[in-house]
Image (tube, rainbow, N blue to C red; front, side, top):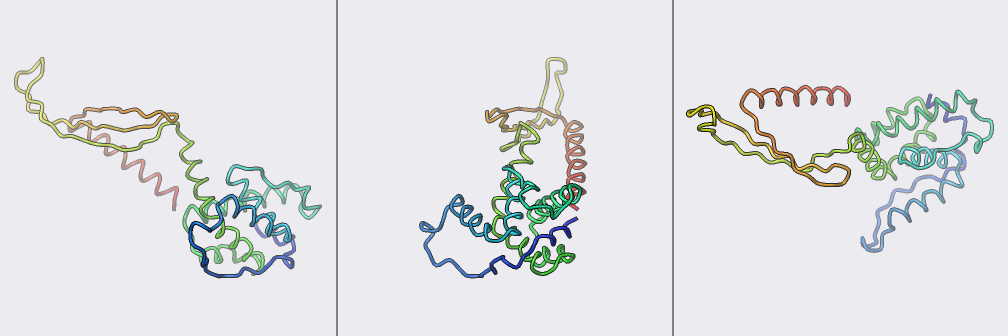
Length: 211
């Protein structure tokens, strides 16, 4: 449960200052430098440090260790907190939740702890989003890069002198294990309808997973 987060005090956490960068893009810090600054700031606040380390785990780096935070949580509480917090971070960024929506989802937490989670998610949302995209792409080694189609009319074949059948030629540009390749598929009307039905069914599953 994310409520276990309140076992870590928030009194030492610096208040967030909302200000606009006045530096030109060429002088703004890189992602690596920005992450170092965020972790340096988090060192003075155990709460922010913990949340940033959970984000590190979401992004494929090392997860936080329970022993670094004393005996605040039992092993069961720690596992529940890590699972809940990492799932929340993935959900909030994956769904593109606004600040208000995140605060509403964190209504069980007190204001200081909820603000710490919001501050961390907001400051590293781009990094988290890229990690989620990479994780999704990693489900399959083959990715669709582009496609093209052509409609043609088959007038005859080696078996029939008069055919007059419309055919769709679908060209798929794929990348498999980083290597590009093209797959060409020729379909008649019935085969095309079967493909459309299969894609519609797959889209319904995706929409259900998002809801």
